[in-house]
Image (cartoon, rainbow, N blue to C red; front, side):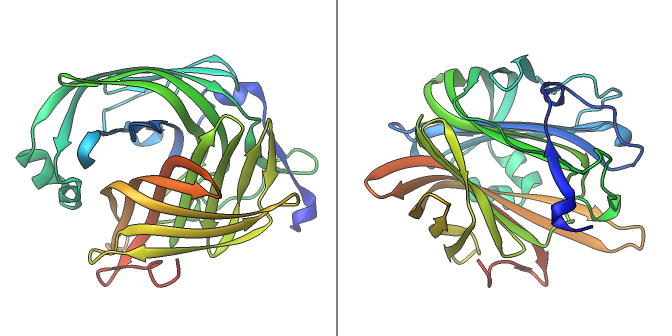
Length: 337
């Protein structure tokens, strides 16, 4: 099917859980991040309901002063896809496309050296667990970006569940207010962030590698740069309008562990060209492992880095999320971007 035969749809009801597709790896996930640019602190929260597999993926990540990171990953049992709530984390849609509330009450592991999470079992054992609460209000400052690709007649596109990362995905930049408390530390958040949602079949091994760079400078200027399979896409928010990225490039610097340390990006829209640099402030390496029916062990690494961005005279903050399949001990995309 040609590109011209495809359109994208997005309805307010897509903010709420969908009827799961009849495939084992159906995933419906919501992700939200929030940062205070002045203090360079913040965090992100994710729930991925894999109801057909009987569990949810729950992640809470808090970037604390001094490079420390508080982190939780849990796989609680679930038997319904009717809500985004598990392991102490809840995401509530108050007004579709406009207002969401995030709440968390539980314990997270605080790491002085976040790189230890490359071995999660050891990291969770060797580092302290402390009480954490979060209450954050997200309000959209932009249009919606993305949706569900369909045929011109509105019918679903054919999808191979074994090779799928999602069948629908959208994002939005937000203003964020509230608090995150980790032990005795209280992070007052009055800043910006981004949230996204996806649903459909997902295996983390469906993509060889990607680079995802959501960033915020102020309520009138923000970006999301995405690189999948070498193709650069995304959008630039100027005022209250998104301008689609038509072309671009992303280059990265690496440390001895193959983690990103710095980024140089050039992107172009129909209205302008932008040069962006990024400097990693704090990074935590995460992983997903799966054994195929043939017995092959697949290993996916996702490095989640709070990153300081610069574009012209503007300074911003956001994430550099790098996903790579690990083959022969190496991230497959490190030689590319």
